[in-house]
Image (cartoon, rainbow, N blue to C red; front, top):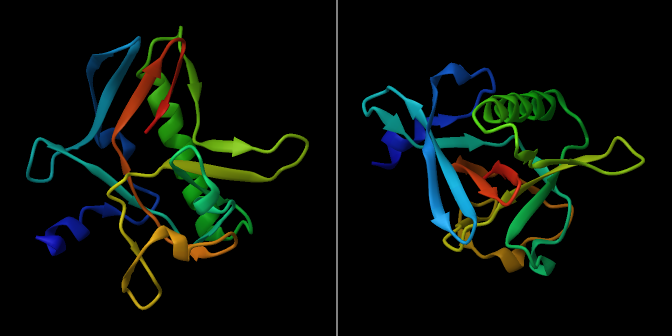
Length: 168
């Protein structure tokens, strides 16, 4: 089963984004809602979306994180990181088209004020698995700032809260 999943992972950033399918907005309570995002076709009508990042550097120590996310630097800006950055920006543009204009879209890509330094944040699941460079299971305490990592990220839904929204 793992091998079937592996060929569904987006590893090249020229993926046809027209294959993304946006479900109806679902109210989940407390003024929050979400819009599920899928890939259409390929066996099932709707498939989960997994994206493998290039080798990328941790921007902040994940062990000191209060917000249950992982933050990686988009520098040094190698060709592969540049392609990944453009791909995420294209997903952001497409996401914005599928939400009501009254919501302010918050990108996962964050530009540091007064510089060109950019980083990207991803939500960190409690069931997240971490492997070392020998492909042995380890835990987040083994990671530290400036480690190079590769992440397998699932584009799951667009979250909506109050007048803001973003990709999760």
